[in-house]
Image (cartoon, rainbow, N blue to C red; front, top):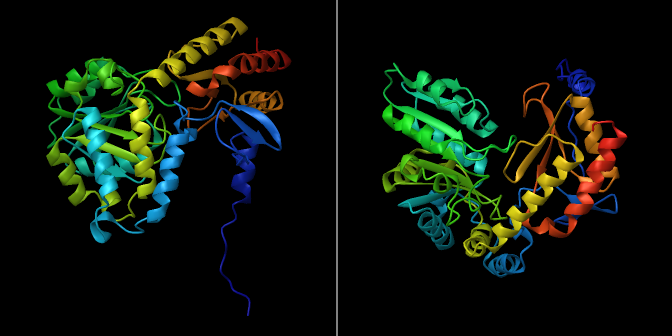
Length: 388
């Protein structure tokens, strides 16, 4: 007997994505670091968020290797199978580094945003979110059930307008510290002042600024002297730390509240202790500052090189978007660069608005020997495509 069950046909939707130059595919990559191997060829890697190159640090790798002797994972929630002392040590180190009372580790940065934001407010409350915030923040806002208002990117006046006159039980303002696709920084002091004047919690996702900015590398809040205005900092261990996982820091009551209320913490397996051990080791390298110096030297050299080639570069951070606009042209440039020996992705809708497709360059501290070759590849590719 033939089943009458109708299987959803995704072919038409996939064809539409391809037609609109929005189709995505996985590119097999071998090895990690500033040079990767694609189809047997050594390629300069400009896609990584491993900003300080710590994912390939020998001591960090040795730490993971030694930790494996105790097993891979708890394979359960920390509230069920017990609280691993390595996770507690990492949380202590993160809180101390940030000068906050407590930290709480989540399995990923995405889950940290979901787990924190969606549990701090509810259907009687208000969230005001920057229009360029990361997808995880957008999803967290929707999941919370709160009334969500979006303010114009980094616009102090619009934030004040969206907050004023609102009579909600609780209000929350959320922004990124360094915006992941534009590479610019939030005006944290000004945004924080407006938030506090309107009795709103100020939450910053500093995944791309953490361990890079500030005199003590505490992130963008320290860099912009806005730490007293930031109530909650959410971040990641998979960027500058070169490891894996996400975390939140704040006061002790906040963390205890999340342990008891955050479903994304309660109902998922704990971050494997091998990654926590790696982060503890990586953090020791972060606070020395030598890797950050290499990073910013590389950023300066690459940005000047792009400008000299003829590209319009506005970002001053380690994330450098080259705005192309047209999705097909951005894809073509990405593929041409790969042939020229550089792996860098075309970022398109829905990650960025339609018509603002771009090549997103991530500079790391380990690219020092490859900057000139990468710039030569950009120059050749841009000339081939008549972009300059």
